[in-house]
Length: 361
Image 1 (tube, rainbow, N blue to C red):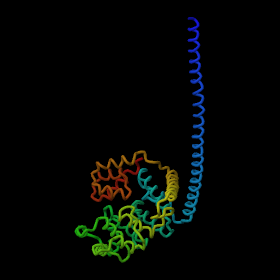
Image 2 (image 1 turned 180 degrees about the vertical axis):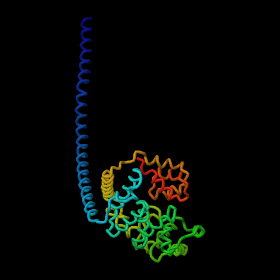
Image 3 (image 1 turned 135 degrees about the vertical axis):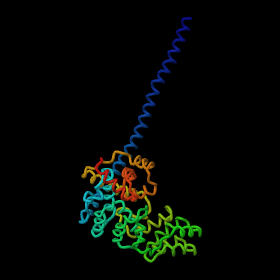
Image 4 (image 1 turned 180 degrees about the horizontal axis):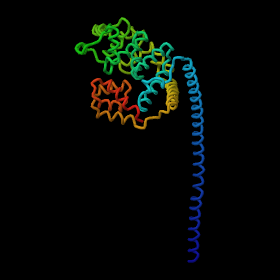
């Protein structure tokens, strides 16, 4: 009996020992495998980090190169002024000044203006035109065949028209309506004839070329010559890219003949390389803007701009008036304030509101 118990205990001890051996050796084997896998993973991560470091170094080097070239280009422009030299940019509160300075630096860095054109730009801003209005007129001018001096002439008529597209009305006045201007009734007639809104908008851009008239373009569409075919002949291009609306695509083609954007090729095929070039260029300009703001001790506005625009939903002004004032560079705060001023001239009200708020931080 004792022998039997002893044998049983011995057997149990053997089983226990075997189990313990398995339990102690198995984790060691697993731990070794884990270390190997971890080593492989970290090896790959280290390689990725090295690649990213090299890529970042390369990007930083290219960014410095772009920044140096931009500085050299700007240094040659003897007529280029600092934003702080213009009352139309600085004579307002910090929130509006922040927007104005940012717009001005971006505008003068992105476009390779000659000193003659900078003379015109300086006169326009000194006359009281906002940088935002000037930019709108400049973008419009790019689609025309007119001399650059027409930009100044259009800006001089800003007080005469109040609408979202006031500059087009001023242009029509200056050119004696030679390119045509559709009335509401004429617009409906063309739409009833089967011409789409997109085609009419595209024709409205095309007609700004010398010798063109919107009526002739739309009548040709009705006769069977489509907008695309007419645009290719007018601008000397082989195709119209189908990237957006017909209006937006033709607008870009119209601009590309005059625009001198420093690092962005209009209508270029979008590749990883061109995207990165654009990113670098915009980062350089962003640094330039921040440098200019810091030199004038203008800080980033505390209020979220989105919440400012949300507040306009309660404004007494209709959306069309709000948009027209925002396009002229007025902040939501200034627009709200102007709605309280009893003046039927919305533009004058906004100017008065800017004056009242300019000492507020």
